[in-house]
Image (cartoon, rainbow, N blue to C red; front, top):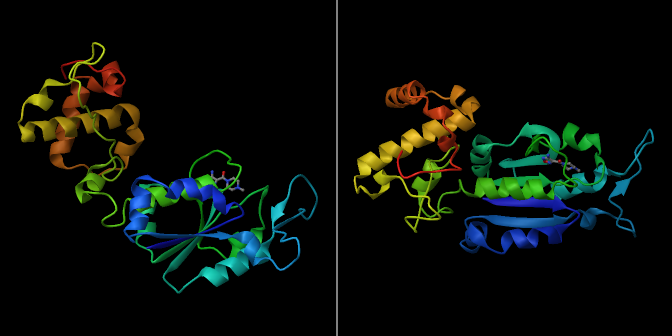
Length: 258
Ligand code: 4HQ
């Protein structure tokens, strides 16, 4: 898949490409990311990308011409999606990440200043994306978040497909707790079942922990889910025992027993 990012701060993306799983995806050619400087699509001597708002008021607005010209120059064919990062956009989530990862080309427009001329959202883009209810100084960190999250859905990017499938939100549940050595750390142990060698038992424990964590921390996620019968039974037993009200179940404190 190919992602094109349009920004007035292309150098901000260097750190993003420099390490981790995204770097490996780029090296392996599973993901291609091109960062374009919006100023390259201006025609005046000062490479001006912004101007004062009609009607007056504070701040500057990104002009429509360079943004339109950039997208028109970059866009390959009908299989591409164009999104503007904006707090007014549709909330980005795992399901959308998965959908975007199957596009041939994704073009992300990063705004700056007070905003982008409305005609960009009116007639250039397929939609607007928001990564959350807060105001960033620019769309760049949001584009980073979107590309990072969707890269995990490109086949071959994450080592094992199973770890994407298991992850938080893929199945609509929060992840179960993880432990590694040492077995005893500052007086805190590790649940016994993880040393049992019984993988069916460990899987069942993890499923139960996922359900319990989700019920405690994000009950809104459970409401959206169609649970399988055995998950429903697990959930009922968690509720009956009142486990989701215990302070341990938030994962901050953990004893040796479940
Ligand atoms: N922006 N999710 C770019 C955001 C934002 C968000 C504010 C977008 C500033 C210029 N983008 N403008 N939240 O806060 O995506």
